[in-house]
Image (cartoon, rainbow, N blue to C red; front, side):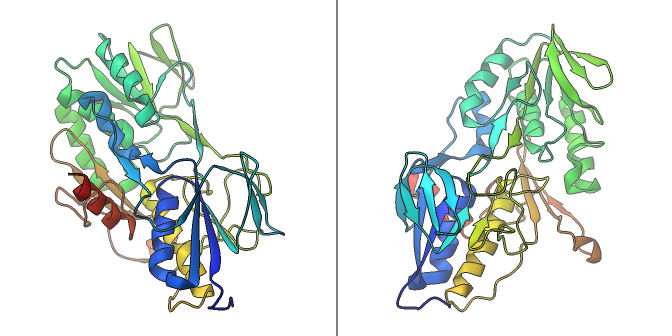
Amino acid sequence: MPDIASPTRVLVAGGGVAALEAVLALRALGGDRLAVELLAPSTAFAHRPASVRSPFSGELAPEISFDRAVAVHHRGALAEVDAERHTVSTTDGRRLGYDRLIVATGARPVEAVRGATLFRGPISAGAVEGALRHARGRVVFTLGEDTEWTLAIYELALLAAHTLPEPPALMIVTHERRPLELFGSAASDAVARLLDRAGIEFRGETIPESVVDGALLTRGGGSIAADVVIALPQLEPPAIAGLPAGFLEIDEHARVIGVPDVYAAGDVTAGAVKQGGLATQQADAAAESIAAEAGADVEPRPYRPVLSGLLLTGEAPLYMRRDISPTSALRTSPPSMSRSPLWSPSGKIVGRYMSGYLATTAAAND
């Protein structure tokens, strides 16, 4: 166990939700036992879940600052990990040491449907707005077969139906059997009713492949007429020398399997569902384990993924929650769905430490 007089040096590499939650959790749990450092390209990041509003409102997604997260901030990005020497190299050639490392670098969004207008969050708002403005025929919202977190295509379609002055014909094309089925049958039924009321057609169990000459081509030789196709990206893992290739496999305490003293959280980790709330839960598991190793009075809890989703509908939002951990089938708690908030503060990003940070940051900016 590290000497209390010599704080454990924890380096968090990344500039998004998982990284910020990790820093906040480490500071709250470890106190003076931990020296927390952050390696991130910027001092803030855009609130990506809120960016679905931008193509319709014209407003930029809010910026989430790291200013109030107490950590030594190194500007840069992670390029290489030397686990034996406990050092990392940055993309600009610097070397930083660590006792424990949390990799929260995210993943690369890439095209999933050839020829479609890609919605990647804040940087894509203008392209999506322009595509919708010029649409005269059908607009299709879709995503690749490897994308399990589908909520954003429902939000984009519903917001288009409720905010465009003269909405065109709208359709959702997805590999799912039912609308937003990840949250269970009750939530799926509620979303289906929302789509029906908004006049949005749903085409399930369909894999899109490319957009050619005013049509969305689907696997098996199908074709759907479409004036505009807007697609979510698929995610590819970053290439970080010194770490296993691909998405990082972690154990129940978020340790990277096979790499001592290295943890990972967020989209960089293996797992079908990539979502901000799950990223914060992984970051918490890593922080609790590290704080306990440093001698803090913390009982590390294993990572048990619970999805929390706030669906923007163009009307009252829909709050959904579901335990998707492997052991959830052994419990009797059903999925939750409500028009009233199921968590507090009731934001789109749900994190044990981050939710309060976001709420107070928003209040300070008002």
